[in-house]
Image 1 (cartoon, rainbow, N blue to C red):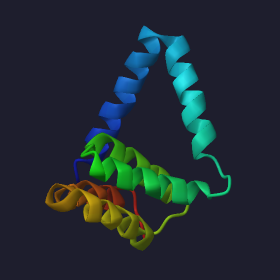
Image 2: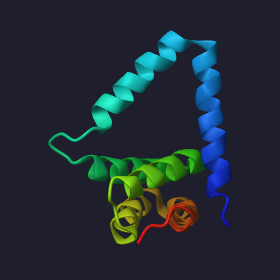
Image 3: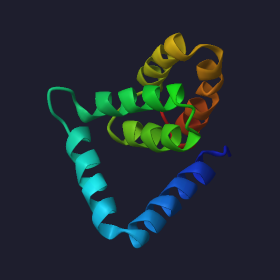
Image 4: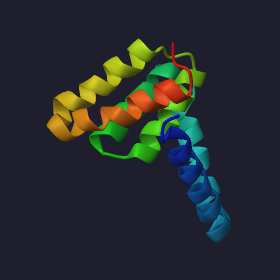
Length: 113
């Protein structure tokens, strides 16, 4: 077992607490995220891979885990996820490469093929 489940649980708990604190702001934010992440000119799967790359560059294990899980659910393969994540490393250097550990863990945890 990896730390991916722990990170996912933490981000979901944080989301619930933010929603309880200010439901209007949370629901506005969530509606925006759902709108920009749905299929459009880019399929949702590609958008999730882009979000993984952004999370790697931003060094966020919480977002890496969440968006890797969502990418897998949208049909992304481990090869697609890793190729996108490696693009972040091209921009983020060594620290970005180190954060690929979270991508690999989430791929393992959520069954990426």
